[in-house]
Amino acid sequence: MNSSAPVCPVPAEQQPINEYQELKESWFFRWATLDLRHYLQPLLLLWGLSWLIAAPVAATSFPIAKYPAQFVLSAAAGAMVIPVLALLRLYLGWVYVSNRLSQATVFYEESGWYDGQVWVKPEEVLQRDRLIVTYQIGSVLRRLQRTFVGIALLLLLGGLAWIAL
Image (cartoon, rainbow, N blue to C red):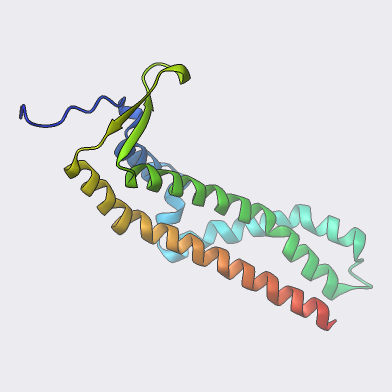
């Protein structure tokens, strides 16, 4: 064993590198790292299932026979709520781990909320963690941000279509 290696007092489950590994292997958070096809499938599935809630609500305001375009636009927009919430949870989880990896210090709890400590990362650990943020997590966050922009554009187009009716 190398005696010059820094000893990390942070419990294993609170170490940012382990939080990153756990997030990356989680069935939910791994979703954002999949190839484009497998990333979009659950998103579209959630949106489709959300129609089960959004369609009846839209139908009460806009009967399909009388206002078909308004029904479709309002139900489609309403069905976006659940996918957006799922994407928001994904984004917040990845941002949290990204921040923990990027920071030069790690706040941790030894045995409970009342005994918080701070560990200053050695330079080599900080560099490793920041490389992970730059080359691994950055692409995931950019993908999620682009997805939010895409959804916003779709909602804007739907709003413009609504105005045109």
